[in-house]
Length: 273
Ligand SMILES: [Fe+2]
Ligand SMILES: [Fe+2]
Image (cartoon, rainbow, N blue to C red; front, side, top):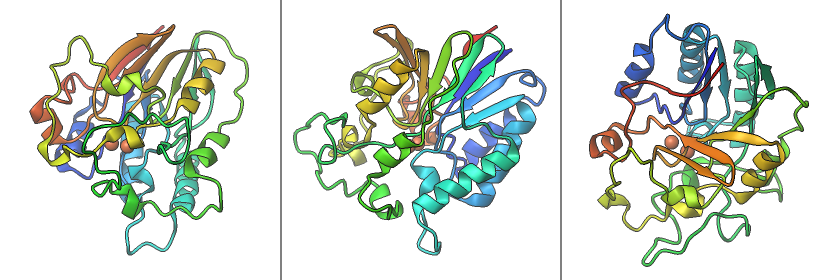
């Protein structure tokens, strides 16, 4: 049994959907795939994609990303309702969203969100000269509707993570958002140097990257490997005994520019019995 990782499928883009469809129907039938968020906000496309993955892999693990909880102007629900509907859909489709013991390894999905610098000292924020402090280009500001009282979306999501059962073997955790500031700037030894996207030159991603609370949690769980997504930069880096792996499909433009690479080989192998 092998464990593969992928995130940020963004299947509303035709070429991304084709990438998923092209994954072998027979190579992964004994394997596990971890999908670390950002598939689509469209319910029908979400269901279809999860079903497609379920046909290709023996087991599919998933946590929602920010794009999955976007609410379009014609939708009546808010992002919290969308989150619960998505978790219910996963349950129906046998998509796994909680701790599981596999042969020789444990997998722990971690729900999370990013924390902005004005929201928490756990924010991964790093100041940047000339940055757009209002995040005008950040679509979450328009498409995430959060009405859960005083509690921030990050605190709400983190509180959903129940303590896993003590199992056997190494622990693989995964989240959509980043758990550490260093990961924003790290580079895979095999990846070309990222070039900035000019349209995003005053966008400071660190404002919405993740939360340090995630790192505390994954270390408490004894994680050896942590999979994450969200930034659309593919990396593999060991920090203080944990190997952090990001393998995002991202957008075609990012693949063409070389800021996302290594996708021709499919999802990334992270563990093998
Ligand atoms: Fe994404
Ligand atoms: Fe994301």
